[in-house]
Image (cartoon, rainbow, N blue to C red):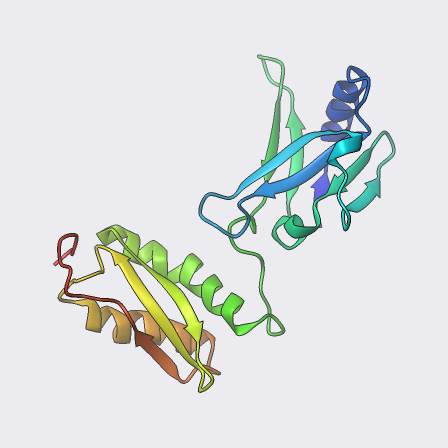
Length: 191
């Protein structure tokens, strides 16, 4: 789960002493699993409690983890470092945009993980992206291209030589990929 270092615990405990109605802190992710994911720590008050929260009692205060954020908080680290200006609280959540996956994860999650972490960074160099639409019953990943890939004359090569090859190397359970993109719109195409 999440690690809150001793220095971060001391810092947060000091802040909590200045809040009369705070029960502890709440850790959650806004828009988890998206490119806009943002890890947050806030004071937790009576009205903030939600059914399903995971509550952890630390030595100096309690932490409530939002249930829907838990998969995205795995391996997260909260730290506090003193510096010349006072100090800085940092939160690193490497799985905020895409939760860690393993062989037991749903195929959709595993495909999205590969697309997000390996395929899309390469496509971004040309202003493109690809997203999963669905996994068919016969194990084809149906994809949709956007940005510079939509309408690009090299999309077939990208699909077969790049995206499909990468997905099949890492997820041999897939039968292949299919493109459902309308490539007649070439207004943003890279080539």
